[in-house]
Image 1 (cartoon, helix red, strand yellow):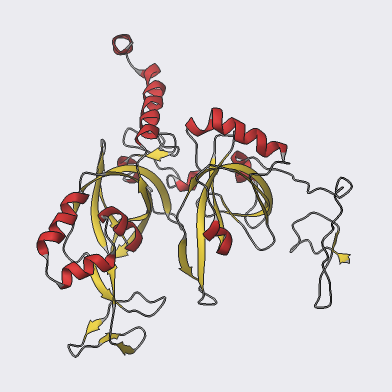
Image 2 (cartoon, rainbow, N blue to C red):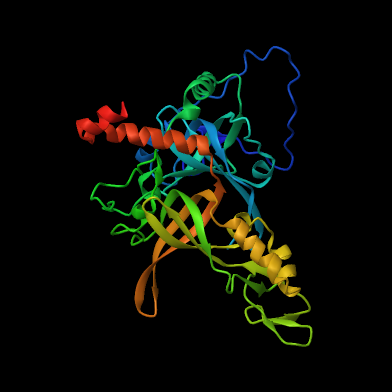
Length: 379
């Protein structure tokens, strides 16, 4: 038992205990646990996270509104594969924040029933404005029955919250000072946090140090079939293009080695559109597979067999479908010219009921600014 080190201890307790190799942990079998101390929380509303400094730890209670797929990334320092899953947490402050789970917790998480979740000591980041992650010192309670705030929020979500339009944090939206085509500030998105393609073309988008992120409903109107896939190095963590030596071997210049096989990687250019315009976006492996409805391996087999008819059918079946895109916008310099590059960070099937509700709310919000004869006709 020793005095707590504040920079490492997130419990706000003056003391901490350290276990060593000789320590023993014995479960308490007593049925009466009423005398045991309970975990205490100092919850911060999701809508107030912008008042919290990055790299601090907070207690959060929310409802899982969105559940992303498990992703595998490579840790830069250790070069180990890590599994992660992003959740969208909401509360009655009508804000949504991204929470990242790691490891087994990410792999085993089931958010299909939109459970309430409590995190003791979630780490705050300024990524995308504000986001949260579960660290090794965090405690996660899923659908707790002894936390009144979680029970109240779950009831609110079931009766009201699931139909609400949630705001996201500003740096997920527009670059500072960005505006829409009509001069109105587009930071919040006119569809309850969703944006229009015209918002990404506003002045200042992508010019910040960090990229700007947008959520946008878009319809695929064109897919570039030329050079949409390539043969890549099969080494784990390396996706560099290989050179076919013509002798049954493939050479990767990055790894400086030759292998008898390779893997197929997708790099798809797509044009998406909505009622305000269209734009080109870049789709990498996961998002490209989702949009095309086929895996890279299957598409590679079609390409190797020169089955152009089947490949053409895949592309034809993919266009004019609508999706919910998560877009990353950043200005890059290419050949001494600056250009805005938009990459698909995530793509999900469009919930048409949710989209219709957002449209209806946008129309209602717009109604007071319309001429009386228009609103009278609509009524």
